[in-house]
Length: 277
Image 1 (cartoon, rainbow, N blue to C red):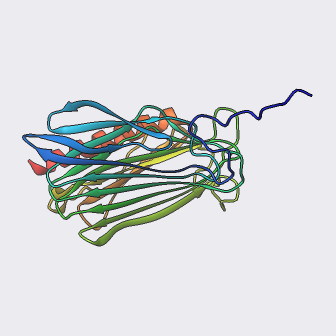
Image 2: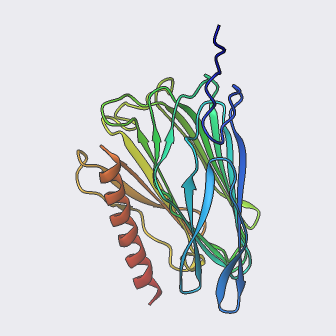
Image 3: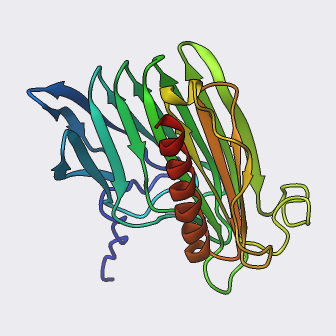
């Protein structure tokens, strides 16, 4: 009898049902008129690539080293901007949540810490929730009183021609130790009313941009509807109880969602700049 060999698991991924455990870390520090990166440690599915700096801003791209998140994975990114540093984080491609070998949910946690007079711009590509996937995603953000933040997060519910998976998200932002924003959302099978007119209706993409800017204390933005038509998507800008504003958008697909968010962000930035003059 010829012996047989079991196929090897994909590179970097255990064949066990518990999934991948990984924590990737990046730290930005101010130095000599620029921002340097004393810590740039990838792990599991996350690899970090330095991009060309822009002015004093250090730029990092997250590159996927394997398929993730899958069911059972426990993934985490920690990013810190020390005093006076400026850090921009993007991603090379969309994050694709898949079912995986186990029915257990996956987690994807992002922890951002921004010190005084520092800034983080978290601007990755969207999350795509594929059929059968089950993901819990969180952002936990701690800001010093003079910190700045631009955070964009987008979810596309299902790939072309398929139903969505299940995705639950929570965004918690603290400024100076006090809660600035704490919100939760849930979409896909098992989430009550997510596809009704009260939530997404026929739309299958949703996202938001959070702006935290100390100058907004004296020049807060006004509530606005920032969109084209309900069929093509809609966006609203909501000022928060602090120097911050939240742009929330829905759209039929990821491409139109990004268009709406970019236009809404440009409008809000222009309004904020005029108010400071």
